[in-house]
Image 1 (cartoon, rainbow, N blue to C red):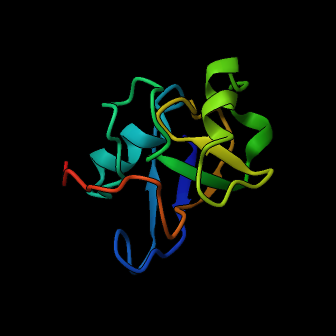
Image 2 (cartoon, helix red, strand yellow):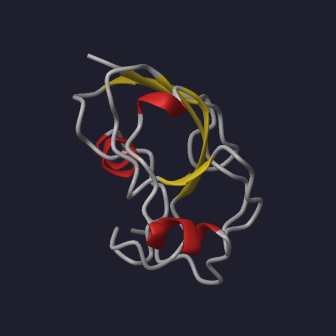
Length: 112
């Protein structure tokens, strides 16, 4: 069973968190199931970038980006080569290290 290591985020996850997850779950769902309130303004339909994360370790075990995801990532705040949308990123068999960006482009947090 792989682990996701969420690095500390000042507001969402101040102490960081290590969770065990089943392969096949998205990073967004894994976070939400473990009380990490990652934004997901489009309700996980790949229509925004509020669930943008950085995959610091384990990228090779994840599903491939879709063209829709790549198009949206171009609009994400702080885009880097390790960027993914957590609602579209399916956990494989390897452990992951995930960093939540400091900002999103969401102007109004809906406090999901």
